Length: 317
Image (cartoon, rainbow, N blue to C red; front, side, top):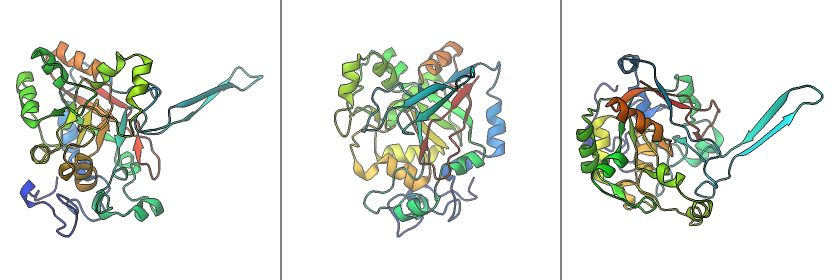
């Protein structure tokens, strides 16, 4: 990790830049952000999470969301036989954020300042490969120790029924309670998973209700609270990436624009955001085993200039 990591109160690092930025922490031309925390030593330690090799996928099918949120195009899958041979080919057309996805650093910038991670401009994004996700692939993907904070299971145990399709906020104090109830400890470089129950609730909806979710230009959904307390906790715990089973990780629409997690994490710190991951089987596996940490590996699509990508993620126990 960086030799001298600043405290949260010492941010922003680039004083004439946007609020809270950590630009330059890993160098002016860095493309990895907090993925730099996934050192060989951290990955080696994470490999000790593998006990018997049990594997769980965390990927929704590409065409699962029907239709996707935010006006995104659905999957188009074409298959054809190459007659007269007994051979088939197929072709895919997808929006890379239409199902389970990683948000990369060229996806969402500081809205007021118009700047992306390490101060890149929209012109930099259009005219170069700055902040492209292929840099993650060249580094070997996202590989480390995953930790699940199963808020949905905890809420069930407390007799709570949070509104899933409203901007219900999950606070840091609640996440700490979840971790304590699980006996889960956090380490520097962890990949944090938060299960809100969104995918579970979505899967129970009939088709007309799924369609109705996408009709607002800015659909509402449960998520982590956008607050200084949340950001301070994320920074102090040194997460390499943050993942949720909900559309935006943070409650959406953003309840406090001053602390918009998309701005601070993607554009400010270089923290990948995983959205709409399928954490249902992972939740069941963790409960069965009585532990909520695991080895995690994810290889995004190797697209030069990539903005976002399906995760291709696997949890290994």
